[in-house]
Amino acid sequence: MLTVGAILREPLETTLRFVSWYLDAGADQIVLCFDDPLDPAIEVLRDHPKVRCIRCTRSFWINLGCRPRTRFTRRQNRAMQYVYDGLTEGWFLNVDGDELAYVQGRNLRNLLAAQTDDVRSVTLRPAEAIQCPQTPHLQFRLAMSDEACERVYDDLTPFMVKRRGLSGHTIGKTATRAGLEGFQMRQHFMQGPDGERVLDQVLGHGEGAYVLHFFDQGYDVWRSKLEWRLSSRGFRENFKEYLRACLEGPNTEDRLREVYDRLHVFDDDQLRLLELLQSRLEVRLNMAGLVEDYFPGQLAQAA
Image 1 (cartoon, rainbow, N blue to C red):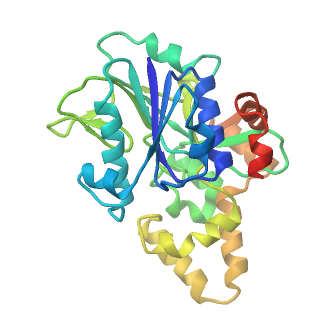
Image 2: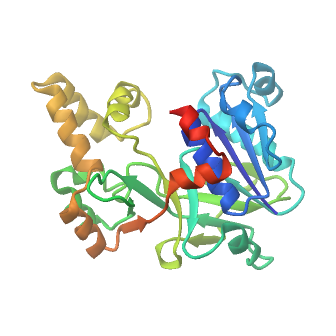
């Protein structure tokens, strides 16, 4: 039994990709907590036999001990704890709407079912999507060493090395067995009463198991979120200072575009370097075709 849970506020296309992916991965149940109670995806998904839609209304949050304006990560943890506590068997995978668990040549459900009884959790390390317009296949970067960071990012290394060459999280996401009492749901793992991180089995490049993280959504989205990230925890402090200097200096937009391109857009030479450093993953999948298989005609309507 595999249950996948997420709280999300995404475009319909992204939500349908998420659901299609996990149905194809063998999920028995997908529980979606919609941060927007009026999300149009609810009408598309609510009658699907393997999808449970929860509208995150004000009363829903109050019942969980928080409010709609409570910090998102806290609400996320409360919502996923609520879903987890309702399970009596199997595995629970806690992911975001832009994260897809990927196991090369295998099925996620079967991978989890093969774990021995003493394994409480399986964590998948992240592979982070990068922009490569010259190739038709999805490209991802993997966590890398400090030395590899220097070769890839040069003078921008100080902004990338702490997260091992990634812009998003480096821990990954975790599937946890149902029934752990007294444990608390966190973004990346379950936490025990004594603060223990439940990270029994950690899989990554060596095992061909990842969580594909579509952290970057292109320059326009990156630019639109820049001010918010500068005022939150979206960037590390040294990177915030660098970006503020770009904003306050001449040729602001050109400088920001250059920073974005150097961190997120990779040409063929850079892809070969990632390959040499064992920090590249290529995934050959027809995402649109997958969504069409499960939800015929819906992508065209969402466009």
